[in-house]
Length: 78
Image (cartoon, rainbow, N blue to C red; front, side, top):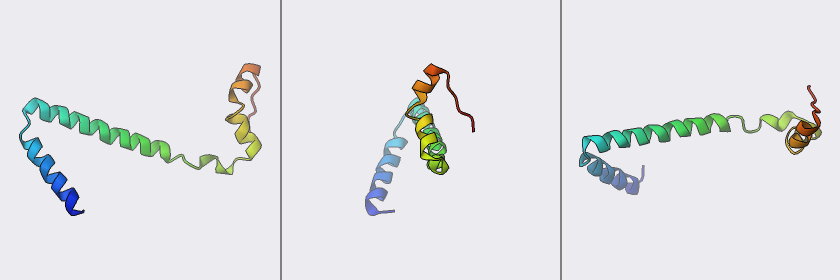
């Protein structure tokens, strides 16, 4: 941790110590939301690269041509 980070952390702790109980609860809720959104993002990013093994024609069909295929009722199951 850098010196700047330490300074910011100390300032935040001082500010948190001055908050009322309802503000503390609001802050905790906000932090919980931040943490859960990060884990959701991590879950989504864990799928990155999943389509690397697909051949390019099939990938185009399930991405670029998706709306066209849905309109025509055409599906291709592998």
